Image 1 (cartoon, rainbow, N blue to C red):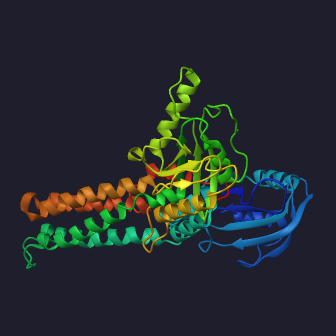
Image 2: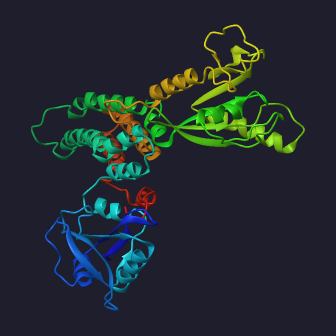
Length: 433
Protein backbone atom coordinates (compact mmCIF):
# COMPACT_ATOMS: atom_id res chain seq x y z
CA UNK A 1 0.00 0.00 0.00
CA UNK A 2 1.28 3.47 -0.85
CA UNK A 3 2.51 5.87 1.79
CA UNK A 4 0.31 8.97 1.93
CA UNK A 5 0.68 12.46 3.29
CA UNK A 6 -1.55 15.48 3.85
CA UNK A 7 -1.76 18.75 5.72
CA UNK A 8 -3.81 17.87 8.81
CA UNK A 9 -4.27 21.47 9.94
CA UNK A 10 -6.20 24.22 8.17
CA UNK A 11 -4.81 25.84 5.06
CA UNK A 12 -3.52 29.40 5.16
CA UNK A 13 -1.11 31.30 7.37
CA UNK A 14 -0.85 29.99 10.94
CA UNK A 15 1.61 29.70 13.77
CA UNK A 16 1.82 25.92 13.35
CA UNK A 17 0.99 23.56 10.50
CA UNK A 18 0.79 19.78 10.96
CA UNK A 19 1.78 17.47 8.12
CA UNK A 20 0.76 13.84 8.59
CA UNK A 21 2.41 10.86 6.86
CA UNK A 22 1.09 7.27 7.01
CA UNK A 23 2.38 4.03 5.50
CA UNK A 24 5.35 1.69 5.46
CA UNK A 25 7.69 4.39 4.11
CA UNK A 26 6.78 6.93 6.80
CA UNK A 27 9.82 6.11 8.94
CA UNK A 28 12.22 6.22 6.01
CA UNK A 29 10.77 9.56 4.88
CA UNK A 30 11.13 11.04 8.38
CA UNK A 31 14.73 9.85 8.70
CA UNK A 32 15.58 11.23 5.25
CA UNK A 33 14.04 14.63 5.98
CA UNK A 34 15.81 15.00 9.33
CA UNK A 35 19.06 13.16 8.68
CA UNK A 36 18.56 11.28 11.96
CA UNK A 37 16.86 8.14 13.17
CA UNK A 38 13.19 8.41 14.01
CA UNK A 39 12.66 9.79 17.54
CA UNK A 40 11.34 7.62 20.39
CA UNK A 41 7.69 6.65 19.93
CA UNK A 42 5.12 9.32 20.82
CA UNK A 43 7.73 11.84 21.97
CA UNK A 44 8.12 15.23 20.31
CA UNK A 45 11.66 15.85 19.08
CA UNK A 46 13.08 19.11 17.71
CA UNK A 47 14.44 18.52 14.22
CA UNK A 48 15.63 20.42 11.15
CA UNK A 49 13.81 19.28 8.01
CA UNK A 50 15.94 19.31 4.85
CA UNK A 51 14.88 18.96 1.21
CA UNK A 52 16.57 15.73 -0.04
CA UNK A 53 16.99 17.02 -3.61
CA UNK A 54 18.85 20.22 -2.71
CA UNK A 55 20.07 19.79 0.86
CA UNK A 56 18.52 23.12 1.87
CA UNK A 57 16.73 23.46 5.20
CA UNK A 58 12.94 23.68 4.83
CA UNK A 59 12.13 24.50 8.46
CA UNK A 60 12.94 23.67 12.05
CA UNK A 61 10.11 22.09 14.00
CA UNK A 62 8.85 19.05 15.87
CA UNK A 63 8.79 15.44 14.67
CA UNK A 64 6.57 12.83 16.34
CA UNK A 65 6.76 9.12 15.51
CA UNK A 66 3.83 6.68 15.94
CA UNK A 67 4.95 3.14 15.01
CA UNK A 68 2.36 0.60 13.88
CA UNK A 69 0.00 -0.64 15.15
CA UNK A 70 -0.27 1.97 17.93
CA UNK A 71 -1.26 4.83 15.65
CA UNK A 72 -4.45 6.41 14.36
CA UNK A 73 -4.34 4.49 11.05
CA UNK A 74 -2.76 1.33 12.46
CA UNK A 75 0.22 1.96 10.14
CA UNK A 76 3.53 3.70 10.78
CA UNK A 77 2.67 7.40 11.13
CA UNK A 78 4.88 10.48 11.30
CA UNK A 79 3.71 13.97 12.17
CA UNK A 80 5.72 17.04 11.22
CA UNK A 81 4.88 20.19 13.17
CA UNK A 82 6.06 23.11 11.05
CA UNK A 83 5.66 26.86 10.94
CA UNK A 84 2.40 27.53 9.15
CA UNK A 85 3.58 29.74 6.30
CA UNK A 86 2.48 28.87 2.75
CA UNK A 87 6.09 28.73 1.52
CA UNK A 88 7.09 26.26 4.26
CA UNK A 89 4.13 24.02 3.45
CA UNK A 90 4.80 24.16 -0.29
CA UNK A 91 8.45 23.24 0.23
CA UNK A 92 7.53 20.28 2.45
CA UNK A 93 4.98 19.06 -0.07
CA UNK A 94 7.62 19.17 -2.79
CA UNK A 95 10.03 17.23 -0.57
CA UNK A 96 7.46 14.53 0.21
CA UNK A 97 6.54 14.25 -3.46
CA UNK A 98 10.23 13.84 -4.27
CA UNK A 99 10.42 10.90 -1.86
CA UNK A 100 7.65 9.12 -3.77
CA UNK A 101 4.88 9.72 -1.25
CA UNK A 102 1.31 10.25 -2.50
CA UNK A 103 -1.13 13.02 -1.47
CA UNK A 104 -4.00 11.59 0.57
CA UNK A 105 -7.57 11.59 -0.68
CA UNK A 106 -10.34 13.05 1.53
CA UNK A 107 -10.89 10.68 4.45
CA UNK A 108 -8.06 8.34 3.50
CA UNK A 109 -6.42 8.38 6.94
CA UNK A 110 -9.72 7.45 8.61
CA UNK A 111 -10.44 4.87 5.92
CA UNK A 112 -7.13 3.17 6.63
CA UNK A 113 -7.94 3.26 10.35
CA UNK A 114 -11.22 1.48 9.56
CA UNK A 115 -9.57 -1.07 7.29
CA UNK A 116 -6.96 -1.82 9.97
CA UNK A 117 -9.60 -2.36 12.65
CA UNK A 118 -8.94 0.85 14.58
CA UNK A 119 -12.46 2.22 14.02
CA UNK A 120 -15.86 0.97 12.95
CA UNK A 121 -17.85 2.96 10.42
CA UNK A 122 -20.02 4.72 13.00
CA UNK A 123 -16.90 5.88 14.86
CA UNK A 124 -15.38 7.13 11.60
CA UNK A 125 -18.58 9.03 10.83
CA UNK A 126 -18.41 10.49 14.34
CA UNK A 127 -14.96 11.89 13.53
CA UNK A 128 -16.32 13.57 10.40
CA UNK A 129 -19.23 15.00 12.40
CA UNK A 130 -16.90 16.26 15.13
CA UNK A 131 -14.75 18.09 12.58
CA UNK A 132 -17.90 19.66 11.12
CA UNK A 133 -19.62 20.43 14.45
CA UNK A 134 -20.74 24.06 14.74
CA UNK A 135 -22.58 23.95 18.08
CA UNK A 136 -22.12 22.41 21.50
CA UNK A 137 -24.90 19.84 21.04
CA UNK A 138 -23.45 18.73 17.71
CA UNK A 139 -20.04 18.37 19.35
CA UNK A 140 -21.43 16.21 22.15
CA UNK A 141 -23.38 13.96 19.79
CA UNK A 142 -20.37 13.52 17.48
CA UNK A 143 -18.02 12.85 20.39
CA UNK A 144 -20.32 10.19 21.79
CA UNK A 145 -20.55 8.51 18.39
CA UNK A 146 -16.78 8.75 17.85
CA UNK A 147 -16.27 7.06 21.23
CA UNK A 148 -18.30 4.07 20.01
CA UNK A 149 -21.62 4.54 21.85
CA UNK A 150 -23.77 4.14 18.72
CA UNK A 151 -21.71 1.28 17.31
CA UNK A 152 -21.98 -0.54 20.66
CA UNK A 153 -25.79 -0.47 20.41
CA UNK A 154 -25.79 -1.96 16.92
CA UNK A 155 -23.09 -4.52 17.68
CA UNK A 156 -25.04 -5.58 20.77
CA UNK A 157 -28.11 -6.26 18.67
CA UNK A 158 -26.00 -8.04 16.07
CA UNK A 159 -24.46 -10.24 18.77
CA UNK A 160 -27.93 -11.23 19.99
CA UNK A 161 -28.91 -12.16 16.43
CA UNK A 162 -25.79 -14.27 15.96
CA UNK A 163 -26.60 -16.18 19.15
CA UNK A 164 -30.16 -16.77 17.94
CA UNK A 165 -28.80 -17.91 14.59
CA UNK A 166 -26.55 -20.42 16.36
CA UNK A 167 -29.64 -22.03 17.93
CA UNK A 168 -31.42 -22.19 14.58
CA UNK A 169 -28.45 -23.64 12.72
CA UNK A 170 -27.82 -26.21 15.45
CA UNK A 171 -31.37 -27.44 14.89
CA UNK A 172 -30.69 -27.66 11.14
CA UNK A 173 -27.15 -29.06 11.15
CA UNK A 174 -27.48 -31.68 13.87
CA UNK A 175 -30.94 -33.23 13.49
CA UNK A 176 -29.75 -36.56 14.87
CA UNK A 177 -28.19 -35.13 18.01
CA UNK A 178 -29.97 -35.14 21.36
CA UNK A 179 -30.80 -31.41 21.30
CA UNK A 180 -33.76 -29.73 23.00
CA UNK A 181 -36.79 -29.76 20.74
CA UNK A 182 -38.30 -26.64 19.19
CA UNK A 183 -35.16 -24.52 19.19
CA UNK A 184 -36.63 -22.30 16.47
CA UNK A 185 -39.66 -21.49 18.60
CA UNK A 186 -37.42 -20.73 21.58
CA UNK A 187 -35.69 -17.88 19.79
CA UNK A 188 -38.94 -16.10 18.85
CA UNK A 189 -39.16 -14.05 22.09
CA UNK A 190 -35.58 -12.82 21.59
CA UNK A 191 -36.24 -11.91 17.97
CA UNK A 192 -39.48 -10.16 18.87
CA UNK A 193 -37.70 -8.19 21.62
CA UNK A 194 -34.99 -7.09 19.20
CA UNK A 195 -37.59 -6.01 16.64
CA UNK A 196 -39.34 -3.92 19.30
CA UNK A 197 -36.07 -2.29 20.43
CA UNK A 198 -35.02 -1.41 16.88
CA UNK A 199 -38.47 0.02 16.10
CA UNK A 200 -38.23 2.22 19.20
CA UNK A 201 -34.79 3.37 18.07
CA UNK A 202 -36.19 4.24 14.64
CA UNK A 203 -39.15 6.14 16.12
CA UNK A 204 -36.99 9.05 17.26
CA UNK A 205 -38.49 11.82 15.09
CA UNK A 206 -35.11 11.84 13.31
CA UNK A 207 -33.59 13.78 16.21
CA UNK A 208 -30.03 12.60 15.55
CA UNK A 209 -30.24 13.51 11.87
CA UNK A 210 -31.87 16.84 12.72
CA UNK A 211 -29.12 17.66 15.21
CA UNK A 212 -26.45 16.79 12.67
CA UNK A 213 -28.06 18.77 9.83
CA UNK A 214 -29.75 21.56 11.79
CA UNK A 215 -33.34 22.32 12.82
CA UNK A 216 -35.19 23.96 9.91
CA UNK A 217 -37.42 26.94 10.78
CA UNK A 218 -39.23 28.59 7.85
CA UNK A 219 -40.80 32.05 8.14
CA UNK A 220 -44.01 32.37 6.10
CA UNK A 221 -46.65 35.04 5.65
CA UNK A 222 -48.08 37.63 3.29
CA UNK A 223 -45.85 40.29 1.70
CA UNK A 224 -44.67 43.15 3.90
CA UNK A 225 -45.70 41.65 7.26
CA UNK A 226 -42.10 41.79 8.51
CA UNK A 227 -40.65 38.35 7.62
CA UNK A 228 -37.27 39.68 6.50
CA UNK A 229 -37.15 42.10 9.42
CA UNK A 230 -37.78 39.21 11.81
CA UNK A 231 -35.03 37.18 10.15
CA UNK A 232 -32.61 40.06 10.67
CA UNK A 233 -33.74 40.52 14.27
CA UNK A 234 -33.31 36.85 15.16
CA UNK A 235 -29.95 36.67 13.36
CA UNK A 236 -28.89 39.98 14.99
CA UNK A 237 -27.47 41.21 11.69
CA UNK A 238 -28.71 42.40 8.30
CA UNK A 239 -29.14 39.22 6.28
CA UNK A 240 -32.15 40.13 4.12
CA UNK A 241 -33.05 43.37 2.34
CA UNK A 242 -35.88 45.16 4.09
CA UNK A 243 -38.13 47.54 2.18
CA UNK A 244 -41.56 49.11 2.44
CA UNK A 245 -42.18 47.78 -1.07
CA UNK A 246 -44.18 44.56 -0.89
CA UNK A 247 -42.57 41.51 -2.50
CA UNK A 248 -38.94 42.50 -1.93
CA UNK A 249 -37.96 38.91 -1.05
CA UNK A 250 -38.43 36.62 -4.03
CA UNK A 251 -36.05 33.79 -3.27
CA UNK A 252 -35.06 31.63 -0.31
CA UNK A 253 -32.69 33.29 2.20
CA UNK A 254 -31.06 31.12 4.86
CA UNK A 255 -29.04 31.91 7.96
CA UNK A 256 -27.46 29.46 10.41
CA UNK A 257 -27.88 30.16 14.12
CA UNK A 258 -26.52 28.62 17.31
CA UNK A 259 -29.57 28.54 19.57
CA UNK A 260 -28.72 27.36 23.06
CA UNK A 261 -26.01 25.10 21.67
CA UNK A 262 -28.26 23.60 18.99
CA UNK A 263 -27.97 24.26 15.24
CA UNK A 264 -30.88 26.10 13.65
CA UNK A 265 -31.37 27.12 10.03
CA UNK A 266 -33.72 30.10 9.76
CA UNK A 267 -35.30 30.53 6.33
CA UNK A 268 -36.93 33.66 4.94
CA UNK A 269 -39.32 33.17 2.03
CA UNK A 270 -41.27 35.16 -0.53
CA UNK A 271 -44.57 36.66 0.59
CA UNK A 272 -47.52 34.37 -0.06
CA UNK A 273 -49.97 36.00 -2.46
CA UNK A 274 -51.37 35.68 -5.97
CA UNK A 275 -49.27 37.53 -8.52
CA UNK A 276 -49.03 38.02 -12.27
CA UNK A 277 -45.26 38.38 -12.00
CA UNK A 278 -43.61 35.15 -13.21
CA UNK A 279 -40.58 35.61 -10.95
CA UNK A 280 -42.72 36.25 -7.90
CA UNK A 281 -44.85 33.19 -8.74
CA UNK A 282 -41.71 31.06 -8.67
CA UNK A 283 -40.70 32.61 -5.34
CA UNK A 284 -44.11 31.73 -3.86
CA UNK A 285 -43.82 28.17 -5.19
CA UNK A 286 -40.42 27.77 -3.57
CA UNK A 287 -41.71 29.27 -0.33
CA UNK A 288 -44.55 26.75 -0.11
CA UNK A 289 -42.25 23.85 -0.98
CA UNK A 290 -39.71 24.85 1.66
CA UNK A 291 -42.42 25.34 4.27
CA UNK A 292 -43.65 21.80 3.61
CA UNK A 293 -40.15 20.49 4.43
CA UNK A 294 -39.68 22.57 7.57
CA UNK A 295 -39.34 21.20 11.10
CA UNK A 296 -41.24 24.27 12.28
CA UNK A 297 -43.03 27.22 10.67
CA UNK A 298 -43.17 30.74 11.98
CA UNK A 299 -46.40 32.11 10.51
CA UNK A 300 -46.19 35.91 10.57
CA UNK A 301 -49.25 38.17 10.59
CA UNK A 302 -49.67 41.90 10.85
CA UNK A 303 -51.49 43.26 13.87
CA UNK A 304 -55.17 43.55 12.96
CA UNK A 305 -54.92 40.97 10.15
CA UNK A 306 -57.32 38.03 9.99
CA UNK A 307 -55.18 35.29 11.49
CA UNK A 308 -57.13 32.14 10.64
CA UNK A 309 -56.09 30.03 13.62
CA UNK A 310 -57.95 27.03 12.22
CA UNK A 311 -55.28 26.79 9.50
CA UNK A 312 -52.31 27.39 11.79
CA UNK A 313 -49.43 24.95 11.40
CA UNK A 314 -46.57 26.15 13.60
CA UNK A 315 -45.99 29.17 15.81
CA UNK A 316 -48.27 32.16 15.23
CA UNK A 317 -46.42 35.48 15.39
CA UNK A 318 -48.22 38.82 15.26
CA UNK A 319 -45.92 41.67 14.26
CA UNK A 320 -46.23 45.48 14.43
CA UNK A 321 -47.97 45.53 17.80
CA UNK A 322 -46.33 48.92 18.40
CA UNK A 323 -48.65 50.33 15.72
CA UNK A 324 -51.87 48.56 16.71
CA UNK A 325 -52.07 46.24 19.71
CA UNK A 326 -54.47 43.33 19.15
CA UNK A 327 -56.42 41.49 21.80
CA UNK A 328 -54.47 38.59 23.35
CA UNK A 329 -54.71 35.39 21.27
CA UNK A 330 -54.01 32.05 22.97
CA UNK A 331 -50.71 30.60 21.77
CA UNK A 332 -49.79 33.60 19.60
CA UNK A 333 -46.61 35.63 20.10
CA UNK A 334 -47.00 39.41 20.02
CA UNK A 335 -43.90 41.16 18.75
CA UNK A 336 -42.61 44.37 17.28
CA UNK A 337 -39.52 43.95 15.15
CA UNK A 338 -39.17 47.73 15.13
CA UNK A 339 -38.95 48.11 18.93
CA UNK A 340 -37.75 44.60 19.83
CA UNK A 341 -40.79 43.86 21.98
CA UNK A 342 -41.47 40.13 22.34
CA UNK A 343 -38.37 38.98 20.41
CA UNK A 344 -36.71 37.42 23.46
CA UNK A 345 -39.92 35.56 24.35
CA UNK A 346 -40.15 34.21 20.80
CA UNK A 347 -36.49 33.12 20.88
CA UNK A 348 -37.05 31.31 24.18
CA UNK A 349 -40.03 29.45 22.68
CA UNK A 350 -37.95 28.50 19.64
CA UNK A 351 -35.16 27.22 21.87
CA UNK A 352 -37.66 25.13 23.84
CA UNK A 353 -38.97 23.56 20.63
CA UNK A 354 -35.46 22.86 19.35
CA UNK A 355 -34.33 21.21 22.59
CA UNK A 356 -37.49 19.09 22.70
CA UNK A 357 -36.76 17.94 19.14
CA UNK A 358 -33.00 17.44 19.34
CA UNK A 359 -32.04 17.15 23.01
CA UNK A 360 -29.50 14.42 23.73
CA UNK A 361 -30.81 11.28 25.44
CA UNK A 362 -29.22 8.37 27.28
CA UNK A 363 -29.42 6.09 24.22
CA UNK A 364 -27.53 7.60 21.25
CA UNK A 365 -29.64 8.52 18.24
CA UNK A 366 -28.95 7.35 14.72
CA UNK A 367 -27.40 10.15 12.68
CA UNK A 368 -27.54 9.10 9.03
CA UNK A 369 -30.07 7.90 6.51
CA UNK A 370 -27.93 4.85 5.72
CA UNK A 371 -28.30 3.75 9.36
CA UNK A 372 -32.07 4.13 9.06
CA UNK A 373 -32.28 2.10 5.85
CA UNK A 374 -30.22 -0.74 7.33
CA UNK A 375 -32.30 -0.81 10.53
CA UNK A 376 -35.55 -0.87 8.57
CA UNK A 377 -34.15 -3.75 6.53
CA UNK A 378 -33.24 -5.61 9.74
CA UNK A 379 -36.73 -5.12 11.21
CA UNK A 380 -38.38 -6.48 8.05
CA UNK A 381 -36.27 -9.65 8.21
CA UNK A 382 -36.86 -10.04 11.95
CA UNK A 383 -40.63 -9.76 11.55
CA UNK A 384 -40.60 -12.39 8.82
CA UNK A 385 -38.39 -14.66 10.93
CA UNK A 386 -40.77 -14.39 13.91
CA UNK A 387 -43.74 -15.38 11.75
CA UNK A 388 -41.78 -18.16 10.09
CA UNK A 389 -40.48 -19.59 13.38
CA UNK A 390 -44.07 -20.13 14.47
CA UNK A 391 -44.33 -22.82 11.81
CA UNK A 392 -45.30 -20.88 8.71
CA UNK A 393 -41.86 -21.11 7.01
CA UNK A 394 -39.21 -23.77 6.62
CA UNK A 395 -36.49 -23.57 9.29
CA UNK A 396 -33.89 -22.82 6.61
CA UNK A 397 -35.81 -19.70 5.57
CA UNK A 398 -36.17 -18.55 9.18
CA UNK A 399 -32.42 -18.89 9.69
CA UNK A 400 -31.75 -17.01 6.46
CA UNK A 401 -33.92 -14.09 7.59
CA UNK A 402 -32.06 -13.90 10.90
CA UNK A 403 -28.77 -14.02 9.02
CA UNK A 404 -29.90 -11.17 6.72
CA UNK A 405 -31.04 -9.11 9.73
CA UNK A 406 -27.60 -9.55 11.33
CA UNK A 407 -25.93 -8.62 8.05
CA UNK A 408 -28.03 -5.43 7.81
CA UNK A 409 -26.80 -4.37 11.27
CA UNK A 410 -23.26 -5.31 10.33
CA UNK A 411 -23.40 -2.96 7.35
CA UNK A 412 -23.87 0.00 9.72
CA UNK A 413 -20.66 -0.63 11.66
CA UNK A 414 -18.77 -2.05 8.68
CA UNK A 415 -18.50 -5.64 9.86
CA UNK A 416 -19.83 -7.13 6.62
CA UNK A 417 -20.54 -6.28 3.01
CA UNK A 418 -19.75 -2.55 3.02
CA UNK A 419 -17.39 -2.03 0.11
CA UNK A 420 -20.11 -0.22 -1.83
CA UNK A 421 -20.62 2.40 0.90
CA UNK A 422 -17.00 3.18 1.81
CA UNK A 423 -16.48 5.81 -0.88
CA UNK A 424 -19.69 7.56 0.21
CA UNK A 425 -18.80 7.50 3.91
CA UNK A 426 -15.20 8.68 3.64
CA UNK A 427 -15.87 11.07 0.77
CA UNK A 428 -17.46 13.41 3.35
CA UNK A 429 -14.15 13.88 5.17
CA UNK A 430 -11.69 16.73 4.83
CA UNK A 431 -8.23 15.98 3.45
CA UNK A 432 -5.79 15.14 6.23
CA UNK A 433 -8.38 13.24 8.24
